[in-house]
Amino acid sequence: MRTQTSAAALPPESGAGAPGARLLLVDDERTLLRGYARLLQSAGHSVTCAASGAEATAALQRERFDVVVTDVAMPGISGLDLLRIIRRSDLDVPVVLVTGSPTVASAAEAVEHGAFRYLTKPVAPAALEEVVGRAVRQRRLADLRRAAVPLLGNQLQVGDLAGLDAKLDLALRGLWLAFQPIVSWSEKRVIAHEALMRSSEPALPDVGAVLDAAERLNRVEEVGRRVRELAARAPAAPGLFVNLHPRDLLDDELYSRRAPLSGIAQRVVLEVTERASLDGVPDVRARIAELRRLGYRIALDDLGAGYAGLGSFAQLEPDFVKLDMGLVRELQRAPTKQKLVRSMRLLCGEMSIGVISEGIETVEERDALVGLGCDLMQGYLFAKPSAQPAEPRL
View 1 (tube, one colour):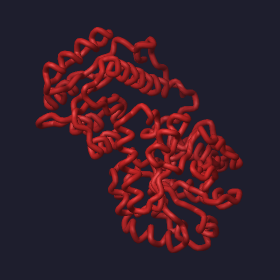
View 2 (cartoon, rainbow, N blue to C red; view 1 turned 45 degrees about the vertical axis):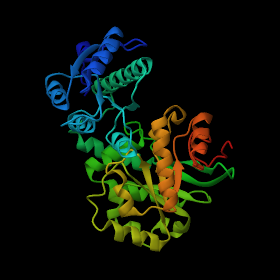
View 3 (tube, rainbow, N blue to C red; view 1 turned 60 degrees about the vertical axis):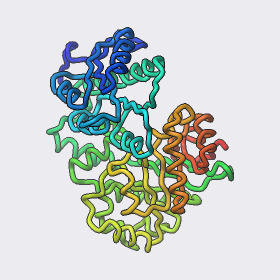
View 4 (tube, helix red, strand yellow; view 1 turned 90 degrees about the horizontal axis):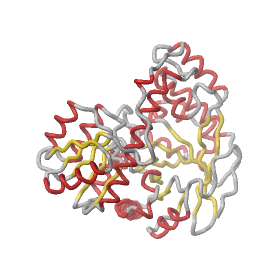
């Protein structure tokens, strides 16, 4: 049944400049706070000011904001504390962090908790106005996506578990893999391909929808087994990266020498995402050790966007880490990202861990990574995922 949504329930339309947003500005430097407020009010936004994290928390309880801009270093509730508080109740509101003393640790935590931007003082007025404008547009896009959910004719409702079960059956039957090359830029060659799950079921059109359905139905194991079965049939390649859901580590079939993927384990790297917690998996180190005995190597995916920060290293002791594309995007224009990527690359080098940069789309991003000492790369700049491994543009 299609649910009707009234026009009043939709977020307002926005022009190119995205004016008219409700902003919360937080900074214990009152002069700076007033300056930011005047600038953003002149751009057409409605601004609420808070001189402390406590004031900001109270304001968030009273009102819904489109964007939060907060200083990091404040007494009591810091900007990072405030970011964590916000994420407990609102996953969509963009939070822009501003600091006069950037550190790798604070930048990593900002990325981990989903900060929209991490700016260094002094912030140029034009730069602040541009970042806030982008954040407003992102918030409105998130609102539109949520408003569109009940309008989608094939959207499965939360309570429709029987329908969801049937759709997941169809998705599993139509599951296929796309392959994207991972290249060494210095050697101009492909070192491996990543196998990426794809769905031909319209009701579950992407990997996120399939996994969400599998989690709700407690069928993650089936999805993981199907992906590994398909990966075992993949065309021969120097190496193959295959994604694991954390729950796959609980599946006894993964550790069986008779399992299809075990037959090519020597050229397979199993990717475990840092976006999900490993807390529900007992004896992680012992399980990883067993996978290594079978011949697999291990990669930590989405580094920089993780659930538990760099603590995943201790449990997985990965052979590779993959820098999240959020760190790569427009890297050449982001000094803080550059410092973070350089530090990660140096630390991983000291531990003999290979670093793969994901999501590279432009020559400028590639060249910035090369300048930071990064060599292994993956992204649309080289090749899009395809049903058959494609020759990259090198």
